[in-house]
Length: 117
Image (cartoon, rainbow, N blue to C red; front, side, top):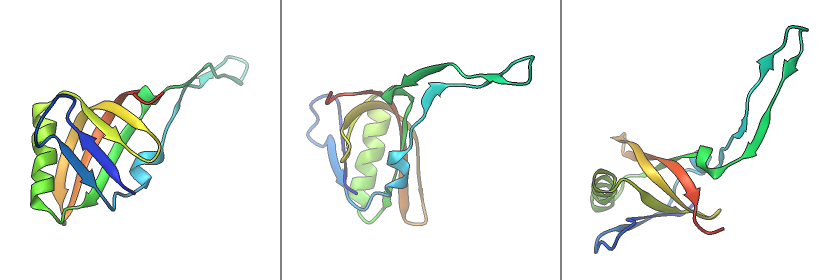
């Protein structure tokens, strides 16, 4: 799967196009609900629906290009928000942990909102 990561402000080097991103880290989501046990042995489950703001993208890709990896690191250090475009849509979120091991790079993006709806 292809993923684009872009700086939220004009930046000559503020864009990377990642290929071979593992799809598993992009498709998960949760609804805003929880289960509360009741005294009668049942449960109450309030459901407040779905929000893109509850998602976390776990973007993993083969670290074949040192320049691409370093640019993603630089953007994650420089900007409090990054724009991430996937096949599903375009999102803005806060960069989370970044790691590089066994020739695989990884960054998490805590999604704030979806931009294309």
